[in-house]
Amino acid sequence: LKKEPLKVMISGAPASGKGTQCELIVQKFGLVHISTGDILRAEVSSGTDIGNKAKEFMNSGRLVPDAIVTAMVTARLSRQDAKEKGWLLDGYPRSFAQAQSLEELNISPDIYIVLDVPDEILIDRCVGRRLDPVRGKIYHLKNFPPDSDEIKARLVTRADDTEEKVKARLEIYKQNAAAISSTYTSITNKIDGNRPKEIVFKDIDSLLTQLQKDKTAKSVKP
Ligand code: AP5
Image (cartoon, rainbow, N blue to C red; front, side, top):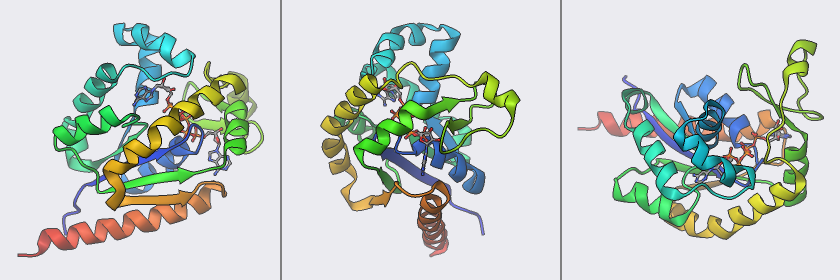
């Protein structure tokens, strides 16, 4: 049986674990991971036009203007690999206007996963987060420290991971969350993200495995 490509959206507050779960989802399901945060950070560090425009918004914890991000996402979604392997959209849509843009282009996910984590835990996760710029892997000083000194020595902190900026990002997330999720009510799956990452992944894994079966069965029906 030919597997039908899955179309997955993952959402949740800053540091709810989207990037961490996406690493695990990609490993198992081979979807094309499209993270607007990762793409924007790469643009900033290469000093592109987009990066230069996005930088001040990102560093202060505000959203980058819709037009910039939407153009980026739709270009990436239309590439062949995303069509063939399926996609995993992380960090988009982040406003009602962004959700509308996808609807207008007839781009709808099969499932909308929301990671639910209490505020006080989110702040600790951001402040302790470190990134490995070489492999792009996400660590946490307490929860997931790297196991080699070589990696430890090269870890970097995100400019928007101070307590003050996390609070601003969380506020913006809360202002937008209800309007965005109203677009995806019928396919929303809320998951308790305040558990060990392997346990959170178990829930996501069973949802996606079932979805994969359902899609494949549907596609072979006459
Ligand atoms: P983005 O990079 O998307 O940031 P975010 O949504 O704030 O999400 P994070 O990357 O902070 O967290 P995450 O949920 O991926 O958590 P992670 O797995 O790292 O966006 C950054 C900025 O870009 C925005 O502020 C905005 O300016 C701009 N931008 C992006 N998209 C945009 C858009 N669509 N429109 C406009 N602007 C946009 O985990 C966090 C920490 O917790 C890590 O240290 C991790 O190790 C740890 N952790 C993870 N899971 C667990 C667990 N289960 N238990 C314990 N610790 C855990």
